[in-house]
Image 1: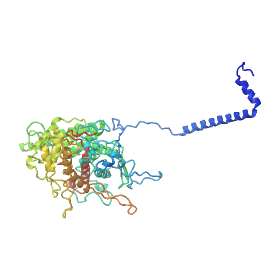
Image 2: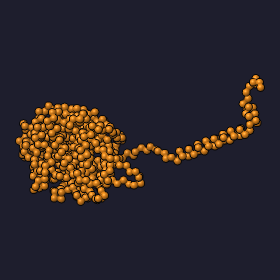
Image 3: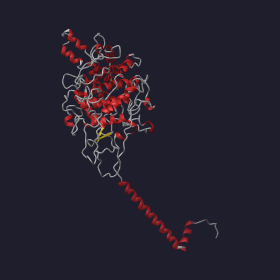
Image 4: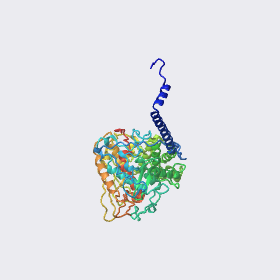
Length: 577
């Protein structure tokens, strides 16, 4: 056949159908079936897509009390090197994930909680902590606050940093504080009787209990959470197996802060009457200040500044007539009202200059936190605290409570049958100087450190007459731990190994030994076993039995065990990465 007319596909297909009709029909039928299947699949697939739920992003409603949106938390979850597990922070426990989602989780069983701080790696809590060095936080928000991180000294394996034991004790202490927080957000020694519901309760029925120190106790408990890195917006949870309850830590912190805000007076103080107590005022002010410094949320800025302004206004004048001095129990404003300025006798005017080393120490710590938070702190306020510390210091590294002549003499209180540790005022003097002046060459510091290590922590044994452990002094241990860690700890610029090393070992041994370790887990043999004391420091010391009981004792010991990361080195020592 000739090809000159070209190829005609239509004619070719017609000839094929005429010559082979059955093949043609089979091919056509297959094409029709394939087309029908394609239509069915497309329709069915689109229907399933329409039935799938649609996720809609909804902007979080900002609560009325927040003026700034809070950035999401950024948690460092670096793995812990196996060879550093004894010196590295670790809250890790076995993770329990129910295999049957229809069975509710039993929070009274100690099987771990995948959403809790127990299972955060590397000791991260997702927050920051107060830091008084020059190093900014390398995690959440730009600030001068250090963060729950090990300093380079501990990271390099040198002794003197936190261990799994100390961090476990911190966690159990925070559980105890959560368990004993009142509904209004406060912590109250007087209300423990109604809060402690187990057979083994936390309060001493014979103790003299007062609610005069509630504002200070609330501030101190708050500082324990803030020191561990938990701000008002922390999302981590802690499960209290004793109460079978999961606590959102940020909610507890926020509730306590709101309690203080409601208590605050227009002048910035927190006293219910017209007689402020400077221990209460300084602790509440420090808590608000560190809460603001942690978040930089403007909601807390003005109340924190007002509290600091009240502390500054309460500072006594220097008797030389120039500059400022220290602090005492009463505020300067109240003393001026009582003695009647211009008409009082000369001996009454001497009350204007009345100061003590302990109250001054707390106020200086609060002012230092304020400076780091970006709040206004007059220079002469810090200089006044330093002037008092120098005045109260004796030649041998000892410091007096009211004047240098009293250096080494006992300070009386409700627990006078306990052993008095004279170096406690030396520890306070060190802290005032370290945080007010930042001079590592201060000749007083090694003298005071030598006095402190002469009297190392000791848990002791119960006294045969009173049953108390007479050697225990949590207050001394707290301030001495801060002072020696700053002066001679792993991140100090002048490490000697003479002070912090021996002190830290004895401190950890004593503090952990005194924590209540009752096993409160429910078991098949004893399904109702519970102890309200678990995790707290119930054994009294020289001051706790009269001035706050186990709330004070637990909060201050948690703060002592946070000393490794709560403060950056004030001398600008080894920097954290």
